[in-house]
Length: 139
Image 1 (cartoon, helix red, strand yellow):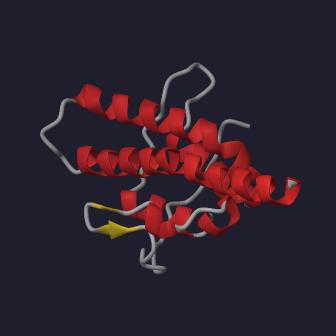
Image 2: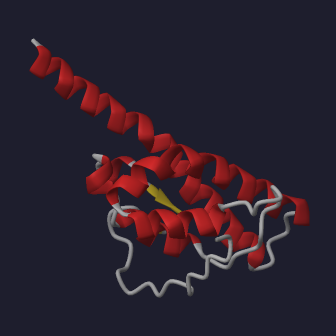
């Protein structure tokens, strides 16, 4: 039955996206802690940004199809410049949780499967988040 197979594929696909979303949220939260003066080394910030960038590259085409401006913002926050160097861009894990809260339905993800991290809940992130100005200078 092709319809049943299609339903299973859609369900499996959305479950496979969860670790990538969690990776982006974890990297963003860790970047927030590092920027706030955590005890990790300066190199840790670069490692977290690269990790977040890799996770984002997997999801950005899907996110772009749902909400192009949000995809551009995530790419800007976790992206690399044309030289391959990452630029330090100010954001918090809370802001990234907010950005993703608007994407779960379109990605076919149940937010409860994302979970919580450092007091941030994927299903109950405050809607009063103020995002930093988006100034993509890579164009």
